[in-house]
Image 1 (cartoon, rainbow, N blue to C red):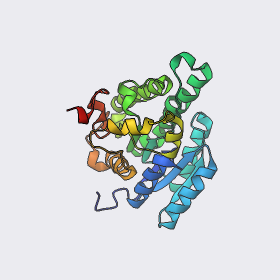
Image 2: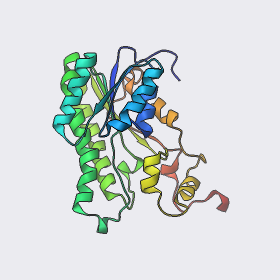
Image 3: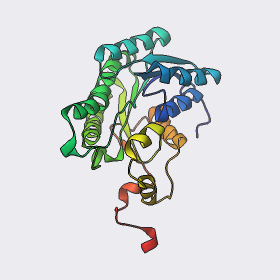
Length: 263
């Protein structure tokens, strides 16, 4: 997609960076020249991804971090600055989700997802402000879901958290543009990962039914999402600010009752 190492001399923090989509982002950003800092609660998730990046000639730092804890997030940013001297890009990708009808959702279940997704994104974003402000440059990209502006029965906790991150994206885009800090979001549709599938595709045939609703007839590929994220964090997207870009194969516009074979 890109001919040049567009992130040469850039430093990017990616939360939830050791596995799944976060790992795909880290690999792509490294290929494009970035030095990447991978954050996750589990060091076991981070080291294999960092080793893979280093094995390809890139630079990667593992930063075990619980994004729910501001002190740990601040330490993650300090380690980044100590190691690389700057922070240019933050990708808020850390997430948590599980299926549960709202009437059965416990208070702790609600808090657990809100803390990771919404509070975690704010903690990381707030901690990134000062170094980005000091260098008069920053790109913050929040990973949402298509239901951030809609609904997803069975995941009210995640819907509320992602909607909050969407509102935060738009508000900070206005507040921080004067510091040359742009804040955007991506709302992915179906990009299967091992973790998400094990938590959300529980009913028999759920994955097959979801696939039938996607107009393009397939799920997304990780590299497609990684390329979009890279574009939005690059200087090619310098006039995009406060936007949420949906990438879902058109499923957002497909009514649940619609089936091609009935047309």
